[in-house]
Every structure is written in structure tokens, then in C-alpha cells.
Image 1 (cartoon, helix red, strand yellow):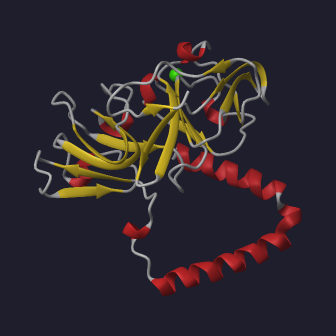
Image 2 (cartoon, protein in one colour):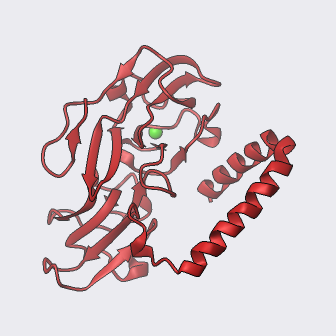
Length: 259
Ligand SMILES: [Ca+2]
């Protein structure tokens, strides 16, 4: 519900700003319909989209065993009959797995996994009950931020791909962040891009089949040098000299650094 409200708010802002360009947009929309028609005519299967985000969830360690493929958030894995039963995952994207329903702040959690066409076994301690991804709902490496109400990417989120001069109902509530795509983002402790600011660059990169995913994260605000629950606005780009480039990159499944 909150997510829907946020998306609606953003849509209203966009509608307000762009009303004088309506003619151009109608033209664009018609062009878009034409493009869509062409795509339909060529009958692209989802597997033909090279940067498609997915997570295949296996209930055994057998790579040839049955799996359920997720393309979107699942707040309750009972809906797929997979509660506490995922043993292995193959995926593209930055996915987050939680031990409780609804990405709850009660969950013991883990970062990632992040892969481009990669697989990994889950630790036996992780009994996954909900999952979602970070990053753009559109293309894999589109510039995007996800702010989370809880530390370590738990709880409700405020997310977007454009400047936000306020976080609406999430004002002064956010405790962790993930960015995806090639752009840095600046987070402010004041409304309308004022106050203390810190800029976060996407210093990690995962690549497979010539597709790359750039990302970075802070599992709590002290990593960024900001007080908890202090962020009030977000801007695309690096708009401050106060740059956080992230900890040294993790080795193994979490990607290589480009610092
Ligand atoms: Ca919080």
C-alpha cells in the first residue's frame, strides 16, 4: 500500500511538471505503441532479453532439479509453496532474501546474493520466507536507489530513479540504502537537497555475458557517516565533496571492485 502511494505521488509530480509537453508525449506514446506492436510481431520470448532480472529458487542442491522462477517481489513465499525450503538460487540481479515474511525487520538477513547469471547455495541457517530485489524495475543496470526503513535492507522502502526533494511518509525513518546503475547518488539530511550530504558511488560491479550490474550499499547510516533516521531528500549525481566509496569489496560471490 505504501509503495503504491509512493509511486502514485511520483507519477503526480511528473504529470504536474510535464503538462505543457503533453503534445510531445502523445506523439511519443503513439511511437511507443508502434514499437510495442513491432515487438509483438516478432514475438520475443522473455529469455531473449539479455539483461532480464530473475531468481530461480531450487528446493534441492541438484542443478537439474525443479525450480520456481521469480521475476518480482514475493512478500510471502507460502504463496509459491516455498516457505523455508529454498536451498539454492541461480539469478541475475541484486536480490535480498529474508527469514521472515514481508521483509520484516525481525528477519535475520543477508546481503544479496548479487549475480549476473550466477548460482550459489544458501547457508543452511537461512530459512527464506520472503524475497525481493533492489534496483530498477525496468532494466537491470538503470540508475536507481532503494532506501530501507530498517538496517540491512529490511522493512518498508522508498525507492526511485529521480531526485526526491522529500521522502514523504518515510521522512526521517530510513536506516540503510542500496544503489544500482552507473550514477552516484547524494543523500541529504535536509528537505530539498539541503543539510548534511553524502555521495555514494556504485563501486561494485558484476558482469556476465557482456551484461554488467553496478551497485553499492550501506547497511546502516553510520557507514555513510550520517545519523540513523536522518535522510530527508535524495538527488541523482554527486553533489557534495563528502564522498563515500564503500568498504573494500567483498571477495567471492559479491563482485569485483572498480574503485
Ligand atoms: Ca529506521
